[in-house]
Length: 202
Image 1 (cartoon, rainbow, N blue to C red):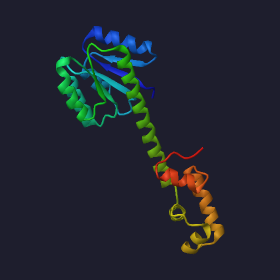
Image 2 (image 1 turned 90 degrees about the vertical axis):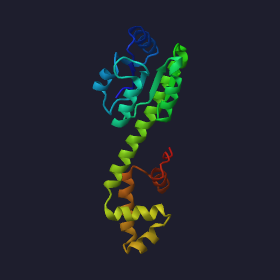
Image 3 (image 1 turned 135 degrees about the vertical axis):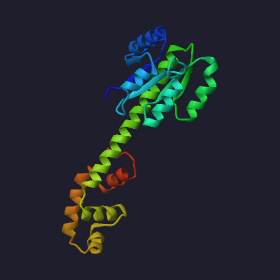
Image 4 (image 1 turned 60 degrees about the vertical axis):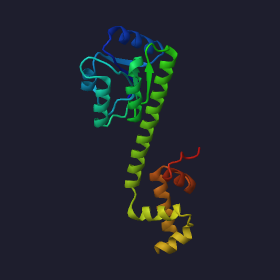
């Protein structure tokens, strides 16, 4: 899904100005006039960040933030605050908000924070996809391939693996080749890096 800035503010003028600013910086933007309107459109697959006014008629930005936390929202949230709202914004940071920006805000500062929030979300999405992919690869291994993999990760050579599992060297080589193929690696070093969460080498 294309990263999008979801802008929630009940002030028409601010919403229009921010939409124009974000789009002028080549950022996708969807604006909502109320927290309720955004909540009705929210789903866990959204990507990008949420730019949220802290004070609004109806459900406030803080109430929406708390509701989204209950739903398991992973979108980074940047609060737009008036000077008197700073203590509330700081409290929200402790609950996991990404940042807050005081009105009147500097355009460049705001866009920079939005870009940083989107970059964070992209890293989170990639990590989640990688984790899911790794889980699927591990589940595709046979029990014997898992045994061989455990011994490879322990630094054992094929001959030792064959002796420990009471199988031939040739059988170890076949299992090794198959598990490397399923795990998407070429060497024992790459396998070790993959299982320890490090990016595989080139």
